[in-house]
Amino acid sequence: QVQLVESGGGSVQPGGSLRLSCAASGSIFNINEMGWYRQAPGKEREFVAAISWSGSSTYFADSVKGRFTISRDRVKGTVYLLMNSLKPEDTAVYYCNAVRLGRNTWGQGTQVTVSS
Image (cartoon, rainbow, N blue to C red; front, side):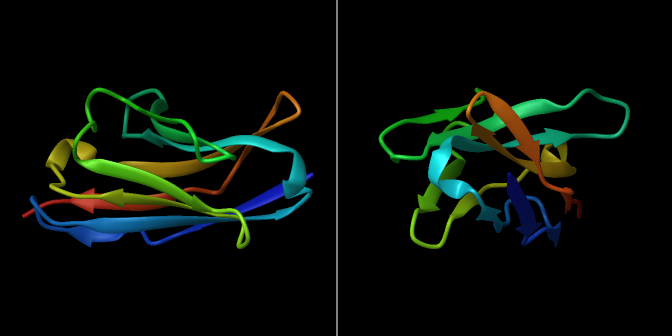
């Protein structure tokens, strides 16, 4: 099994930046892909970004393309989400996700608030 722990959330003004981290532990050697989802109050959880464990492929939601970057450190088993030019509509709880052998594992979530 895989365990995920997120960090790096917080409050920032519009136009600011934050970097989220997700540390994976346990059976990380079979991870195929890791990514981030978010859920705003009253809304469904939505996809934000993902990266293949090889690092060769990245995927982004249209709403964050050009503003967010995803990367991973295979040695540390950690995935990062660098969020630039943040907007109030980016406010949500951000969840880390790992896909391993066809199964999803979720982190506990970290709050990101963008407000002036």
